[in-house]
Length: 310
Image 1 (cartoon, rainbow, N blue to C red):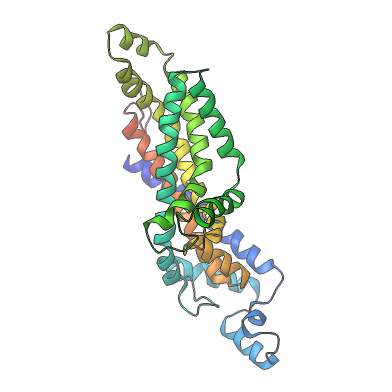
Image 2: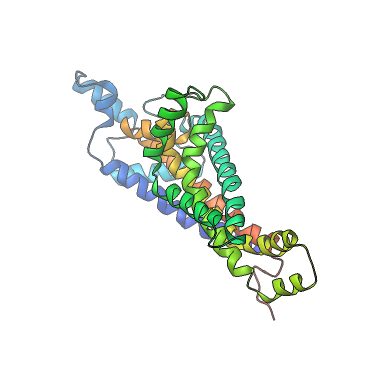
């Protein structure tokens, strides 16, 4: 397991390097002068040149890229043009809010998808199955930029049950979590149903039933436990998607996380901050997928990493 972990970490390095390179090039090729945006259109040319020299934007692109990589290896992502503070400090300040939103969305998705998927698989082609599949279809079909304002209009403005935006209390996370987790819940529910239906056709399940075990025990112990493997893969990918999808959701609900910080940095052409935010999301995505692979060994002891069975 240790050798496998080291190998996966080494394989993740080119991915992170590629993300850093792509983001750096895209941000510097986008039209617009960040110095002009910071100082305004009425700024003097001498002031523009002085600030451009301080930010190293007067150097060739290759020199800026080399400087960016050398600083990033040391853990220095530079200073935000707009916030006038280290990028790492700004990311660490906003990261807890994004993690809180992602965890809440994941709990909502799993809490809705697993029972519905289990009920749908236990009673295929029934009214429960049709209702669950219809719910999943609606969840997949509704994008977050449409569902979010709809939930705000209904539960915040019309019924006045929940706050519109911000991160003031526990109730503030409900609407963003439902918005972000609805699509994930629909995908997990359909995967749970299909995996359970396939597992319950296996011979060892028939043997367990022949022994006279209660139906609920067969479904939970022999069915759901075995069906967790494909669900772990999908869950790992979806958690990574939550981090990326938080950009839209955090903007809708004014949630003070990395997603909203990234949008603000893009609008202000804040190159170091955009690069730092995207790098943080990429590292989170790699870490989640690595943890998913390691959980495979816990869920199924038959799986061996780093060596072949002989």
